[in-house]
Image (tube, rainbow, N blue to C red; front, side, top):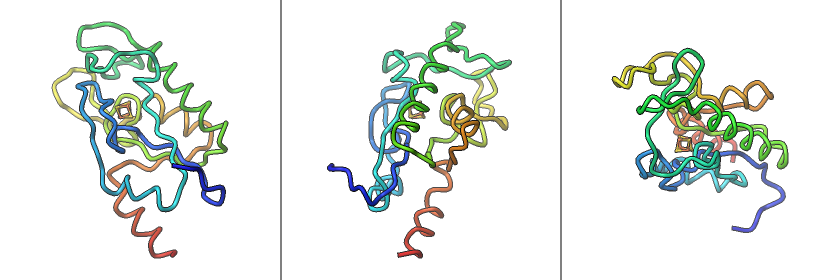
Length: 156
Ligand code: SF4
């Protein structure tokens, strides 16, 4: 779609927009995320795919500040690279807002898995989320998207 110069640019987790970029090769299409195009110019990001990791790939979780794959491989370097690429995109387009997928070791905002691959969630943020927040970019998780879209409509 052609960019609309009157709309601000935002980053959005690509899997929420229907890209099959998750570790298991699936998308997490979110109908509210698809409505964002009515209000913003969308820059889809997938920090894990952008980092050079393949899709599908082994799932990874954060443990003691490192990102470890289910096979026990330290993939922190990839996740750091993906976060850096997302930040570069944000800076290039003067992005002030990112809509990211909760629970992911890259994109999680309030919760991430605890590093034991047992499905247990703990409070924490993904590596990309952390880097964007540290650079004053607001993050809204997909779990708050319905409320966010309603607030945008009420401003119409
Ligand atoms: Fe979605 Fe983020 Fe995981 Fe990519 S890294 S599949 S955008 S949650």
